[in-house]
Image (cartoon, rainbow, N blue to C red; front, side, top):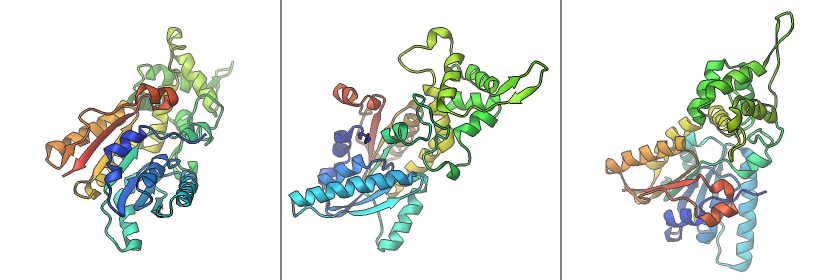
Length: 325
């Protein structure tokens, strides 16, 4: 199933995509399946330069295919529809400025984006089809890496099978904000250790998402195991954030993006949980208070009920936008 871009119309309007001039530069820092970018290209009739970041090379290939197909369809209907200038960057967006400089070396033109989007959500493809262990609803290996597992310092498997109880608890509490973090960490460590009758400790491994989800569920108090949100939700979020170093990547990338913006350019960020939103809210306030930016969204924009009904994964999204002075 193709990922449905969240808050699409609000992003297009908030970034003033329809007002962009010929060959303006739009940067999508989380390309995914290319949904937001495809809509930007359509809105500008292809007369735009697009830079798309994604750590997942498979996502870039999917986005290329979708975008090229849409451009071809539009050009068949409208001969004036242009072919956009596309640059795809297969790296973490924390390397934002370095990547722009590398593109400048090729194009021999300075790049100052007019519109930049960070969609910090995980795509439907990565959850449902990547096989990397992002979902606790089906049995998959415990990777939780946006890129290939080999390109990461450690995976979720490494955390649950080799880290000590205190560090596991700190991860689950710090990145998942789960009040039962200590109980969960204890249950994980106990599950990977089997004591024989003679007292010998024999190591076992927690290998799959379903194994881990069941351990977490049993660690919860019985009266909390069957709520609307699965008990493993926060643990899986925490492990994913830790494996991909997501929060530090955001803290490094967003300032680089703002610095690179053209005067009058806009920066939009869609966050999906409080940890991300706090980082963005704090940084935007710093820029506004310092007179470097003006607020575009006084309050974060959230999806309407109709969008949540059509795409339940959008329910926790928040969109914040600032404009560079």
